[in-house]
Image 1 (cartoon, rainbow, N blue to C red):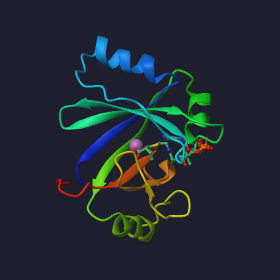
Image 2: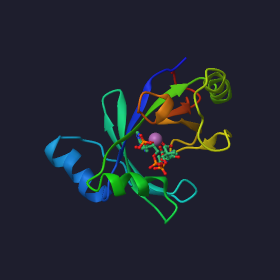
Image 3: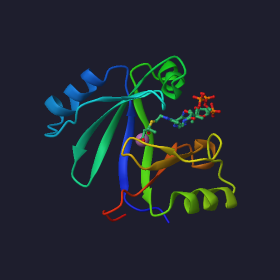
Image 4: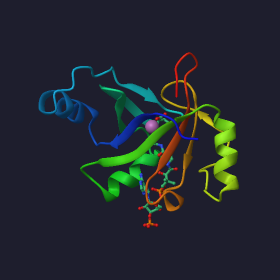
Length: 141
Ligand SMILES: CC[C@H](C(=O)O)C(=O)SCCNC(=O)CCNC(=O)[C@H](O)C(C)(C)COP(=O)(O)OP(=O)(O)OC[C@H]1O[C@@H](n2cnc3c(N)ncnc32)[C@H](O)[C@@H]1OP(=O)(O)O
Ligand SMILES: [Co+2]
């Protein structure tokens, strides 16, 4: 069911500093402009790597889901992995049917690439927060 690894989410207290790390130390050549997603409580910046991306995420607002993570990991760290799926509703129903907890109401929300996403709780994913994202139309999974 899961398709391509779309991105690895990395929480950071400073997108600016983390972007400089990926550019100046790791040699990333394409750092996209950061943008706010108030409805998701994050500021986001994508760093291109061959065949995938790093998604730098900074908390936005007091209710941000990233706040708790940074309290435990003040320097930031690997936050989630995101896989592409063909049909987000079918993926959601499959997760629920297999006993994996879909976070929130279960209704997919629009993610950073403009397609619907869900999150599956780390307690059911071997300790890894898993994001499932519907593949943007016109691309392959
Ligand atoms: C959607 C826009 C963008 C995109 O790509 O499109 C993004 O990806 S934005 C990413 C930020 N948004 C989210 O992460 C939404 C889903 N996350 C959540 O709802 C929460 O972060 C949640 C429920 C995973 C954890 O909530 P909270 O931190 O309040 O819970 P606890 O601190 O009590 O943690 C419970 C339990 O889970 C472990 N945990 C927490 N975060 C992670 C993580 N990122 N990876 C792995 N494990 C995590 C935590 O250690 C606790 O474990 P325990 O053994 O019970 O101590
Ligand atoms: Co993500």
